[in-house]
Image (spheres, rainbow, N blue to C red):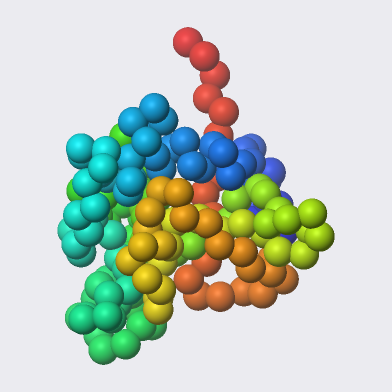
Amino acid sequence: FEAQAFCVWDGGYLPTDAEWNAAAAGGDEQRALPWSVPAGSLVIDPSYASYWSMATQCTGSANAGCDVEDLMRVGSRPAGNGRWGHADLGGNVWEWVDAWWNASQKDRVLRGGSFSKHSRSELASSYRRDRSPAVRELDRGFRVVLELPLP
């Protein structure tokens, strides 16, 4: 709810689940991962995103374990940018979108995977998970969608 409030304050809005998915999948390219070229490529390494790996744990820093040091500055992994230059659509932090998980309206949708204790498969453009919007966690964030004036 704070993410939505910030977006409104900033003159934008949280992306819908469909908008977020379209950006991550590269629209009609239907990329498996935001950086996948060709679209079906499943190559994942630390040059694309900060994510959890069984071998190295957090890939964002050289620290052991996962902590705040593993949060990366936005755009730190440009090789992982999406089709239209969107940074960090896979990894770093889960992103809230403007969608309820189901009709109960208890949990909201998160997209994109994170640096902390999750599977690499969660970086997939199509992956979704649910969490209570009332709970704050280090590995959750959001992006603001701004509508730009047409030329």
